Length: 466
Image (cartoon, rainbow, N blue to C red; front, top):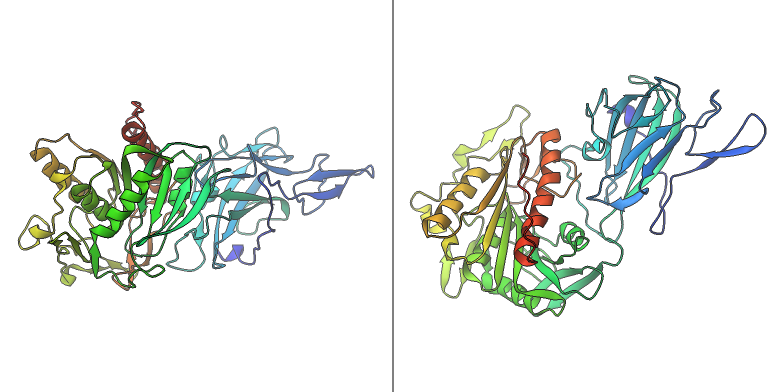
């Protein structure tokens, strides 16, 4: 990707409907015409233009149509995308294309011939973005501002694509118009509440992130755009909360549940829980011990309590044991921890098995079958067995092949490896980029359908196609 170095983002756009970058190019007749940043004069009577539909600004989880006009019939071009995260780290990718006989290029109808991806990938220029810095994950920390993606059209293919033909800036936002962001310091609770536009009431969800700690808002803010009142809840390493994850107390999470249930714009009687990784096992513990939980979704979670002792009213669930001897080192020198956790089915770690049979809610387990953080499919299956063994309805388990640990909202680039907050070393997360991207789109739809059915009384449930 060295040929991509030196890119810079073209600038920022204000307002809801930002437009493609435009420059004035003189026509042979002396009159001026507008096109999307045409870089070099062309013999064609038509300027090359790059457009995004329905708008150059959308929400991060929404698809866009990318089109190029004014090319020569059959012209080979390279489309590049670049983004800088909030720390200034660049992400880049490119696709190689060929215009049709009319000099047009439609990414939803024109397959990529190579580059960072191949085949028909309308959103490939987003989900295939890769960090220039090794072991770096794309994270949105301030949801009030969008990510700005610069798109470029260059003449020809690698190794030396020709002049720049057109460029546009595509803004991908994390808060839909009218969504309200409310920082929360209520009692001991440290969180941010996202409310959809309008008076409500709306189905309520508590969203928990993984073992990295802090307050992660981007998933909650996007869910609010789909009419869910969503509380992004921190539980350590944020504000005045504990700096380390040593002991966790369910009373803290119970306080958050009661706050959301009593909120005048939240539809009752119960709420939903959504958690990934460590947040997933916390959701299972909340559902097992606390009242007012109607629906729970875990994304690559664990039915064994992980990482810290969990306390509630005199009951303690110890963390499941680990065996460092089962750590593997990949050929690239990264750590593979998929086999490190002890089985919660064997002594003495049976005490770490979360008593999910006590829960009075419905469950959805989202599973990446190539998760290398731990054996998510095994852990979800054992949770389902325990629930059914106690005469309760079978939970829904959706397994995605070729999918790793970090299952994000649609179009987030897959993170194959990064630093693990608890391990203290870079680990592999698993996944194959194309399969992982497809899984993220489907899982996002499945999660929303599940919550609408059980929190909002919507009977429609569409089985996954995967």
